Image 1 (cartoon, rainbow, N blue to C red):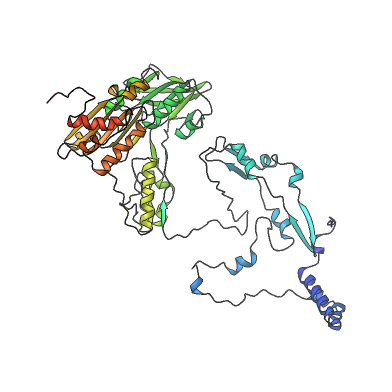
Image 2 (image 1 turned 90 degrees about the vertical axis):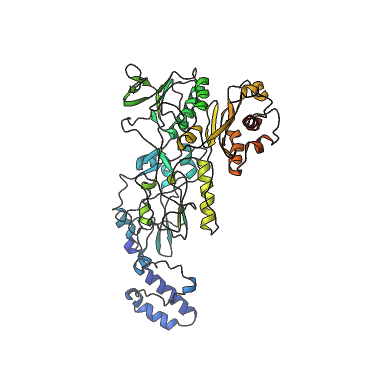
Amino acid sequence: MTFKDPTIHPSQITPRAIAEDRRQWLKNLALGGAALGMGSWLEREAFAKPVAPREKLPAKLNEQYSTRENQTSYEDATSYNNFYEFGMDKEDPAKFAERLQTRPWTVSIEGMVKKPVTLDIDALLKLAPMEERVYRLRCVEGWSMVIPWNGYVLSNLLNRVEPLGSAKYVEFISLADPKQMPGLKQKEVIRFQKAIIAAGSQPIALPFMPKDPRVVDSTGALLLQSIPKRMLVIGGGIIGLEMATVYSALGSRIDIVEMMDGLMAGADRDLERVWEKMNAHRFDRIMLKTRAVRAEAKPDGIEVFFEGEKAPDGPQQYDLVLVAVGRTPNGKKIDASAAGVQVDERGFIPVDAQMRTNVANIFAIGDIVGQPMLAHKAVHEGHVAAEAAAGQKSYFDAKQIPSVAYTDPEVAWAGLTEEQCKAQGIAYEKGLFPWAASGRAIANGRDEGFTKLLFDANTHRIIGGGIVGTNAGDLIGEVCLAIEMGADSVDIGKTIHPHPTLGESVGLAAEAHHGSCTDLPPAKKK
C-alpha cells in the first residue's frame, strides 16, 4: 500500500504534461528511438514544454439524431467540476474548500412521514462515527486523488422519520447556489410534448389558529400520534365527521362545530338525520350555526372561543383541534402561467371536456380543476386526459359522481339529490325502502338505514339516489351504473338481486316506486 507523505506540497507533484512526456519517451525508447528520447531527457525540454492549448474536435450536427437541445457551452464542458472535485487543478480543492460554508446548511427530511426532521451539519456528523468519514488518500501515477466518504445509507435516514405506508417515492432536492457551488445549474428543464397537471389541493387553514402541533389538518389527524381526551372538530363536512368517528371510537370526547344549519353538505337532510340520530350519544356537542372565532395555545391545551346559536358559555379547552373546513386548489402554487396555462382567482385551472387547458398540449385533472374534490373523480379524469393526449376521442361526460361519508353509519349518494331537483325545478318521483323491512339488516342488528331512488317524473328514468346504513358506500355502485345506463324503475326492479342482502334494497326501492314491492305495505294512493 502506498501512502502520501504529508510534508510534500501539491505543487511538488509532477505536472500531468511532464508525466505524459515521460511515457512517450519510454515508448520511443522501446521502439528504438533512444537517441531522440535521451536527447529530450538530457536537454530537460520535457520540463519546460508548455501544455498545448485544448481545441474542439471538428464535428457536424446530424439533424436526424438531434434532440434540438442547447449544446453545452465549450466553457462549461472544459471547466466543469462536480461536488467532489471542486476544480480541475490539483490545488483547487484546497482553494475552493475555504469558500465552502457548511453553515447554515441543513438537510430536511419531510413529506409523508410521521417524524419530519431538519438536521444541521453537527447533527449529521453525529449520525456516523469519524472513522467512516475519514478521507482516504491515494497516489496514482503522480496524481493526487481524494476519495471521499460515500455518505449515509438512505434507508437509515428514512427509518428515523418513519415514512407513512402511503409514501411511494423519494425526491432529492439539492443545493443549487452557484456562489457556493461553482458549476452547478440552478434549474432543471424537462421537455415534453404533452403534460397532465395533477397538483391537487391542500387543506384550508384558519388564520386565527395558533401554530401548534395540537392544531392539525386532516393529514395531521391521520398520523394518530396520540389519543386526545378532548377533541374539537371544526367543520361538519365529510372529512370532519369521518375523523370524529375514528377518534370517538378510540375513546376521545368530541365536539363538532359547523357554521351552517346542517352537517354533511351535499347530502339530503333525511340521510343526514339518520346519521345524526345514531350519533347523538357519540359526541358531547354538535354546534350548528356556530363558529370558532379565536384560539390560544395554553400549556395544558388549546383554548377556543365560539360565537353563534349554540356557542357554549365561555372558551373551551381541547387537547387536539382538527381544522376541516375544506380544501383549496394548488393552481397558484405551481407557476402554471409560465407555460401560458390559465388559472382563475381561486386557484382552479379551467378545462374542457377532454380535460384540456387553454394550452392545447397541457391537460389538468383532479382537485385543481374543480369540485367535487374526490379521488375517484380524479382517476376518471386522468383516464380521459391520457386517452385524449394519445389522440383518442375521449371526453368526461359523467352523469353522476358518487359521494361517500365513511362514518358510522355510512352515507352515500349519487346523481341529483332532492334538494337539487327542487332548486332546479325538476319534477321527480321517489322510491324508498326502509331497512327495517330488510331481513339482512335485521339479522345484522343495523336496520336504522334506508335506500331511496329518484326518478324523472316524465320518463321514469333514474336521476339520483341515496343510501344511509352499513356499507352504503359499497351499495351505491349499482345506483351509479343505473344512472349512467339510463335505467328506469322497471329495469331496476325486475333485475333479480340475491336474497337476503343489503344490495337488494336497491331493487326493492325501485319496486316501491312503481308499486310492486311485496315486502312493504301497499302505498297509499295520492
